[in-house]
Image (cartoon, rainbow, N blue to C red; front, top):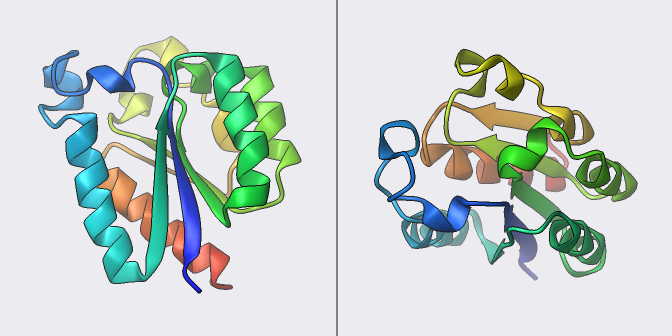
Amino acid sequence: MKETIWVLNGPNLNLLGEREPEIYGRETLIDVENSLREHAERLGVNVVFFQKNGEGELVTLIHEARISSQGILINPGAYSHYSLAIYDALKAVAIPKVEVHISQVIQREDYRKNLLTAGACNGLIAGFGTLGYNLGLSALVQLIRGGK
């Protein structure tokens, strides 16, 4: 049976392709999902996508993921910098988790350099554009299947 990975996208990621394309590129979230579906097929896993702008909605999805998936690939967007609620939810869930950011957040504004939620994940991928989702999925599948 194929493993199922939940892909959680936070606030404003529904505006990919039109919001600050000089930072986030011109690909839309649908483009990202289509690419990730193809990559998931090659890896032999299922992916289920969510995009929520609300912090509480993301917390609820993280809780539900522990029952309905074997791993979480998350781009919490701006919540990554300060959401103790999302951090706590990620810490509480025992399945593997990888955080992804499209931009290289460490090279951006000082307030973006603090990645609170990444500390609750097994790994972090940032700065590779939307390719980071595929890289994150590959890493997550390896974690789920017993790799280090």
